[in-house]
Image (cartoon, rainbow, N blue to C red; front, side):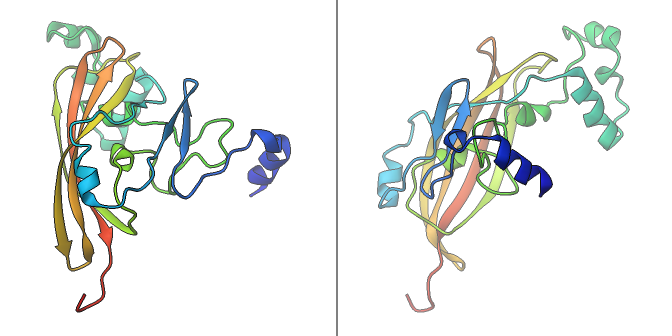
Length: 212
């Protein structure tokens, strides 16, 4: 709380930004990503299938220290992640990052200078399904995800996420009425090479009263 009060005093009011209910601005490299305004129907969402969604830029490059910390947490004693000579003998340029780190390296920052509230919620930063124009809803959850890893991620690599909506399926569940929708996301490095492809399916909707 002390740090929040101090920041409020140090940052001029005209430099602070507020989250709107309909969209959030995320500053990255001098550009903004806007969460789109809600559409009226799921049919309108379906019309955006195949269109490229706004690009999400990872906040930081992969780093050798990250690799050590990643494997430290899970106690992964794999020489590939700390023995450069071995990694090169196996055909890698240098020590690669564990494949799953692509999701972390491609993640946008949770907050940046000039943004009073840089997060959508307390548990996660900006995610590609949030950029799909959907009807206004109060419920939502991810149902499944799969990732295909295509090439190594190395220290110094940066990633951006390029996504598109691939399907929408209207579905009424016990929790409410809404739709499943699937987003395909490419994680692309600074050399325009696709490192991984992720497919995420999410259900979003609104609760309904019994008998509706």
